[in-house]
Length: 543
Image (cartoon, rainbow, N blue to C red; front, side, top):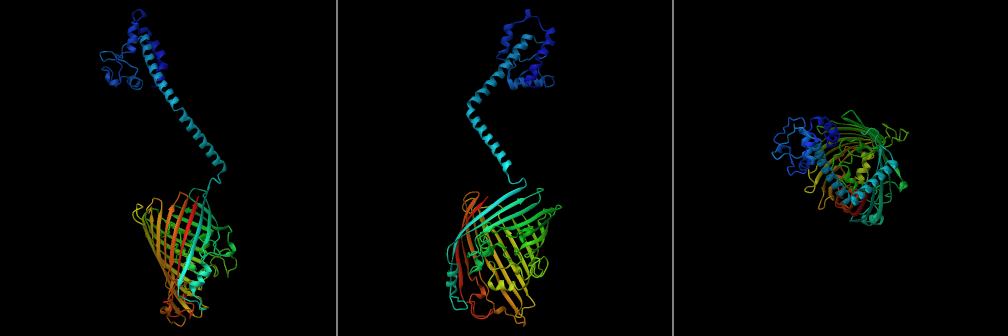
């Protein structure tokens, strides 16, 4: 029973005990007063010899002693709880307890006075937070939509070297410098609206703009392999124009399946697992395909996909279809599942744990699609062959990341193989084979917590074999091999701003066409040299 409850019932209790009390003439008022201020005040109920836990008022007495310290005993160490109490004795006990409460109250008042200024500051801050929360609730974009933005500034330049000449006898390094040798300043801006209606689904809308149309980083320059992942758009007609870059909807189907469909969906949006841990900060576009631009073509358009993931074993299976020309009603140039659809069908099986994973993928693409191979991830010869027939692509990828950052880098590796079957109207080539691979390392918290060091090396898609219609194997005459390398370090300036200086090197970006003289498949050109070295600084703002 709380103290104030005990005090409320005290008058009634005293009234009941009045008949048994001694008369006033028998009372020793001084003794009662001495009792209330007695040095026999106790601090624990265990100090009473005649009070036991079985007593009906044991807990109430214990509370008065331990919380308020206003109960005294007799010199003999007894409480004499069964003895009748006079009204004067009750008044003395009540007064002692009230005095103790007054002391506590005075202490609280003193503390309030001492911390009055601090409490006022806290009150002001709470009021400010309440006002800000109210403002956010009143002005938020949507109760189910989150806006995410990213803007990248790119400042960079390229240099070229080598002794190769084009078909007119002009030095390639001079031509490249005249075309793409200037320092450029480009930007890429992305705004994403992530909307959920149930908490488990996702409607993604991405708006994007950029000014890379005339940049050497667009993939359309003299050296296509210098293309950056952030380069947007790829054509001059849409420079500085905001476009819808993604528009798809994803929802769970039961406990283990997920369905994705959209009018502007990309192949990787429909994979349960992306088979690489590299890179967290993209530089060259060629290193963003898990080593296999053919199988992981990142084809974008109208499509749908489904994946299975049991959420326990680590295994997953993904299947998807994308038509790059799904918006075109002419079956010769577009549609879904037509000859002109620029189709891509992909299947992937993967096993992934928290720190590592492995995946294998197969992809079929129509000739209009070119297996997702373009100048930014392949040699000119590989691009031309992939765009003239159907392609079966295969990929194997794996990755590992340390449990704790700062000591070891993560490692990602991938290999891809493309088998191109040329169209029936090709009078020269029957079949062509191309390959690609890469190894990327990424060191989180390198040197400084929050910063990242990354490097990658590999071979962009290059032709390894060509079969003529005449059954002559021209593999020995193809010198399409080349290497790409990048090194970067991301400074995480704030939670929202990072600065990434990077350098890259392309050993032979034109592959078999490095020397413009002679037939398309001719020998003796592997010694011709032409290389591209470049550097840039990427500044990224995220919000």
